Length: 120
Image 1: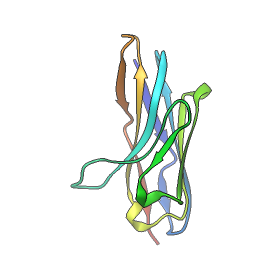
Image 2 (image 1 turned 60 degrees about the vertical axis):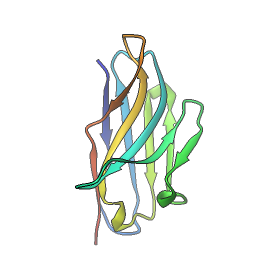
Image 3 (image 1 turned 90 degrees about the horizontal axis):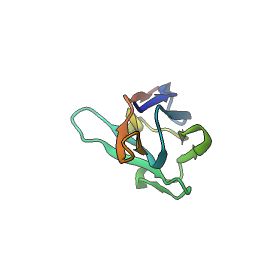
């Protein structure tokens, strides 16, 4: 069974920084794209950032220049460095990964989410 476990959320003041981590565990035979999504009440999840296993990244326009995504393939972990946080970044952040599991098929897995609150 595959699990994604996020950590690093919390309360931060505007202009502050947080680093989110997401570790994949279980019977994993390969990981393709990993990413982070955000969701606020009443809205759909939106892609914040993604990274391929080769290191190619993509960022939402709203976070370019402030957020950085990276991954450690040896640890099956993806990170989201969030700098110069704004109140509008407040959301639950979900980790997402395309993983080859014991069925030998690539499937999309989600973490349970971690809350980021940006407020003074």
